[in-house]
Image 1 (cartoon, rainbow, N blue to C red):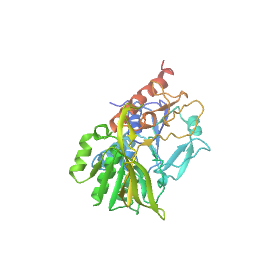
Image 2 (tube, rainbow, N blue to C red):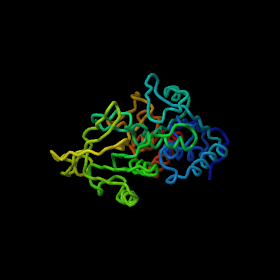
Image 3 (spheres, rainbow, N blue to C red):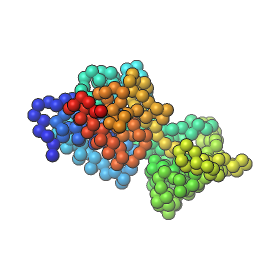
Image 4 (cartoon, rainbow, N blue to C red):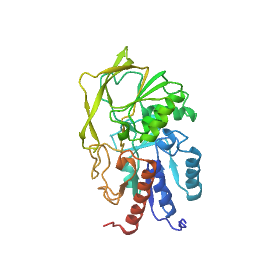
Length: 343
């Protein structure tokens, strides 16, 4: 049951319309707040709509929920708009739809509270020779380009290849390998640990292997061999697993003299994404070395009226966890605006 707004309870800006932002929007609009949602993309959903394959997330369900928020609860969605701290603009993946920017400082003045839920729109780099070759692409970029092409938002397909090497074993790697397989490519899925440590889980990798993907474990890319800026081969070195590292997983240790190459015409890197907060630095708000916004147990930053939720706080995670994070942050934000205290 949503409250009858009656009088205005307050104004809230949600920055980011992915799962965390939408969960918070639903709760806060139901509590009677005026909610404005800002997103750099043409419509809501974040990575759910613009990178994750449609057979995993049904777009119609997301669209229906957004329309309900707009039509029944008077939520205002401001799309193709990127929020960023003044004079700190940065280009992230998925920015091609941005038509205007708004300074975060101006929003702090305008709204009673702000929830930042901008997710993870920047891919990690391999840090090896040849990575900037024209036919090397991140999984996020690859999947994003295919989704906007399929949605009719771009006339340009993503890159294609007949011999595709995907580096990584998380869900982004799985989705990229699956998409390349759909395009009738010979696909190699490579990972520096064993299948047991794969972030995506054994089930997804084995399902791709059953469909013809070549899974090569315990290998690490060493360099990309290019001719005239175009990758032709990728050199790997074999790995043995040592004692657990800081992540708690066995540390990959290269085996000297074990190098080998795979011929390729498309390399997709899927070694993780990093958070993309709407600032490089902002007085009162901390960012850790992984780019995550620092919040307390109430999802509140060092600036009392600014809260954070979702992947921009936790780092890449599952949709359900991001949704739950947004919902919890919204509840604490409501308590803060109601009582002006959380402790």
